[in-house]
Structures are given as C-alpha cells and as structure tokens.
Length: 233
Image (cartoon, rainbow, N blue to C red; front, side, top):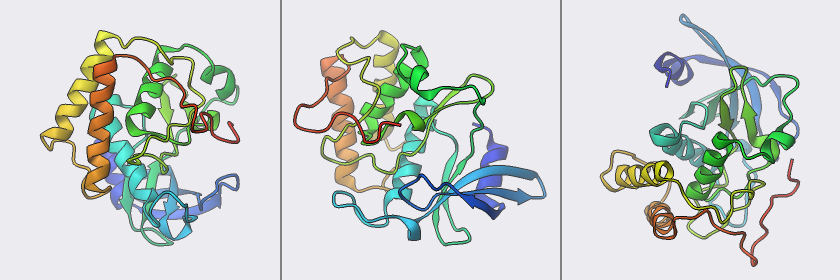
C-alpha cells in the first residue's frame, strides 16, 4: 500500500467536482489536495445513503472500509478506502482508479483471468451482494481492482455476482493459504473490524472462511437467492 496516498486521503482537503449519476446512493467524484499533492477520489457520504431493508441505516460506508481492510490485509484488490469527514459529512473516501478507454469490463469479467478468480474468492469471503461488471476495474498498469462494497459482510448468505465462472472449482494451495492467513488475522485481532461492523457479522465472516476451508471449492449459486445482481453492468 502506498502510505503517501493513504496519508493524503485521510487528511487532505476534498473538493467535489461532480456526481456519478448511475449510482443508487450519493457517489461524488472529487479531488483531495494537500501540500504533498493531489489525488482523484470517490466520496460516498453517509447522509446520501439510501435505506435498505436488509442492511442497517447509515452503515454502508463502514462496510466499504471493512472490505478495504480485508483486502489490504491479504487480497490487495480494493483501492485505498477510509472513513472520514468531508463536505457533506462523514463518509467513505476511496482512491479513484483510471481505466483505459478500451477496457471492456463485461468481456474481461467473463474470462478466466487468475486475478479475476482472486476477486471472485474475495467476494465469497466478504459475502458481496452486488458484484456487477461495472464494479470491476483494470488500471493503466493492468492491475485489477474491485469497487462498491457497501452491501457486503451481511451475516446471512447473500452472494450475488457476475463472477460465477469459477463455481465448483477446487481451491488451489495458494488460495487455501490465503484464506487461512485471513482467518488467523481476524481471530488474533491483527485485522480489526469491530469499529466498522457488528461482532456477529465478524463471526459470520470467520464462519465463511472456515466453511471455504472445509469445502475447498468455490460455492455454487444459491437456488433460493438471486445469483446475479440487476442490472449486471
């Protein structure tokens, strides 16, 4: 992780330049400035969150940050994301990822790219209920990132994703080690989440990790729950 970027995102001054109109919750594009430089960011104020029937009010920004912490601890798939004050109050502030103009998230998202497989596994771990093609990012250096994790980490199984091409596949030794180290980090407190989500949700996270380690395969779609978010893009 680039700590210079982290410090700037945590402490710099946010100036809003526009809004991403396709987002269901208030999602603002802006830049952060300090004496160290400037960065483009996405800012999601809690005040702009739309209430959902199955997630606590005012908690989506915290889940964005929790997903980042899990990723930063082991997976390295989520752009730097912090919870901080901004022009419209406290919210999640995430580093903006520029993608090449010719990047097609649908064709890439339907591939068997090994980094995409890692993202699919991450989604199982965080119980992501909204992995759309448009939430898959590839930067100019070919590095993969995922965004929009506000509706994740629910205690009940709610996985909805476009990345089902790996379902039923056996976990590799590297994937098993990744899951084991993530579970240890949660168990020993190295990975702290209790300031962002409830203790029973952390327990459910550990249960998902342990179940993956028992089954040693990617899960299949649940026939009693919509398997793909709508719209999928």
